[in-house]
Length: 321
Image (cartoon, rainbow, N blue to C red; front, top):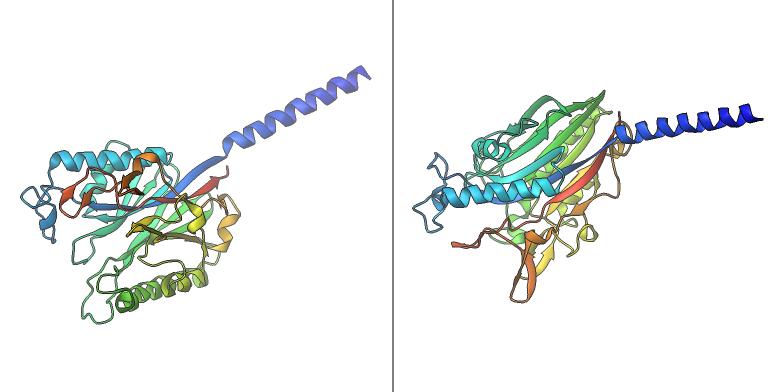
């Protein structure tokens, strides 16, 4: 009897060690998207960056630029240094290089877009955990235009273990000129994104897809609804404390989205289904006329010294050994 008790305790100990090792070997990582609000450098480039130069009304300078970089790094730290972070409203690859700094864990995916304001989208990824297989941009011409003049959709193909993950970063056309009048332009972006998603699901059905971006559309609008026919939305009003990621005239709206393919909820690279979150760290918020709003960098030409006019959105992924 004493022998059996000893054997049983030994087996329990081994079982405990097994589950402890299995649990600690798993990694919970963050995948995020953040509209960083006009991250321009201070150098006069070939794009239309006149608004963000030392001689402009905004008086954009090295001190303000460095503060902006530090602010975004602070957000990344609060997000536990994301596995993947898509960004928009960046001027060029150089600002992403400055953002990464000496952190060798991060790789960069960026393509210069034909956007009229000279802003692009980009992607940071943990190259110590993911292998970049390929990347490219999706360029298209909007209705009423004769040449491409908006942000590209940037995509990257990653490998984790034996699994393939595609990430699409979007920044759809704004509502400038009126919501209804500009809607066809965003719908065009949605159509281009869904065509690419269709091609992945047809040619690589086992591949997982993460779609993210500032769509300048609400979840119920036609463009996001088109993408949601292919992917599962993880950001809703309920994902944040205020019911949105952006505040317009004291109304919170969901403009920043993350959607994933159905096969993303299982496997070695496993997205947690209920993990969609609109992040509202206290330093990202301020009070304006009695209302809580994003702590932005500028209000028109007036420098406020904040972070962004958008809140970051994120999901959680479990990396299994």
